[in-house]
Length: 165
Image (cartoon, rainbow, N blue to C red; front, side, top):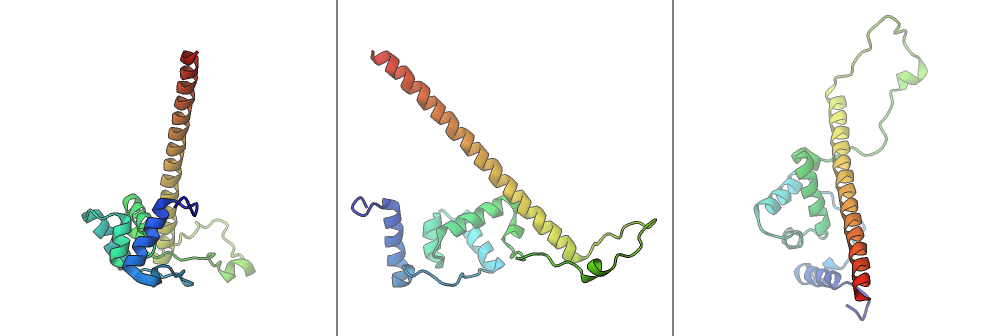
């Protein structure tokens, strides 16, 4: 690992995937494989009920990226199984009616869209925001923890310099 300037863990991962998957483990996939909700849920439940590491489980189920399993498990822990469902991508379409003419709504109560699709979109957005919020909180906690360690290290090194004289 020192010869090539690589982490030994990276070499171990390559070696492990090479042994289990073969030469296909080294090929970079041009197309992303999309896993179904059932596949994701099955992998997450396997991880939570077994003592396998992400790496071991990825090799066992044939997933090339153990980090993907870690992300699924974190999303599952934060928001439950619905976090593993596929989400719509892209910009939401606007109604063509709203651009052409606005109906006269003075004195009328606004109509609330309670369609199943709209509710599902709102729930998906809510879930996404919860996951983002949890991530940012954890990131802040880790940053503060790191700063506290750094401050503690600086104080201890200053104290040791004073005692060495």
